[in-house]
Image (tube, rainbow, N blue to C red; front, side, top):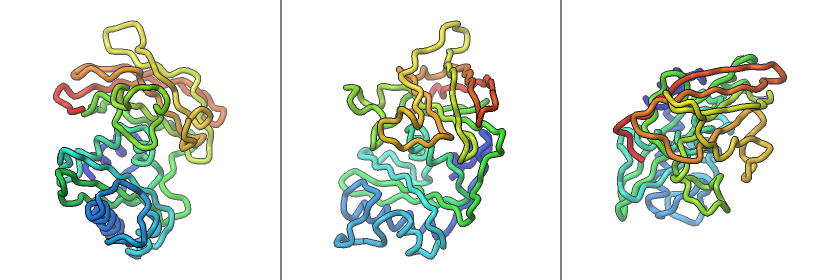
Length: 267
């Protein structure tokens, strides 16, 4: 949880409160994935360990008291998931759709890691809000991850399902770490220009795509969200300059910030 809250606070999304009911619902689902050796958000009532079909059902099973819930799930076949969950939080932050969930307008979080079976384990994050307003950005705010001063642990995009790269003939990890931007939920973010340049160079790096609600092949992005996906992985130890220009509900913005890549980070 430390990685999530450090980056949410630094980048303007607001910290989350760890919630015991969501912790237990996350652990229930991590145990279900381990027991049945599957990676899924949907539980089968006929299988061992069933506590609810969807994340909000499992949260209600543990008396969370709200159906405004979402979930990130990760499986790791090399048992690299840290028991303190930081490793898989970093990996989910490097996946376009999962990062949008991590930095969404939530108030609460639950986190769990399963045991090990067949050299694999699973991690689950559940995000929720018990308030109709949630943790919304200010009306004139633009929040990004990474943001000024961020040090990214991973240089490339994580593998995720569904994949934004279906049909490209390339693996998810052949692309660079995604950059996300959000305005207040319910408003419209329009990106006119978004460039990523390695500090000391003058030519912006090639972007694979600026993903928006209009061109998202999986139709998961909403109008207040956008994702910049570099065409190639970052360089470890490098510093990058980002400039994003556009409008937030018709109001123009122009922001420049820098972040760096951990020289010892993992893929």
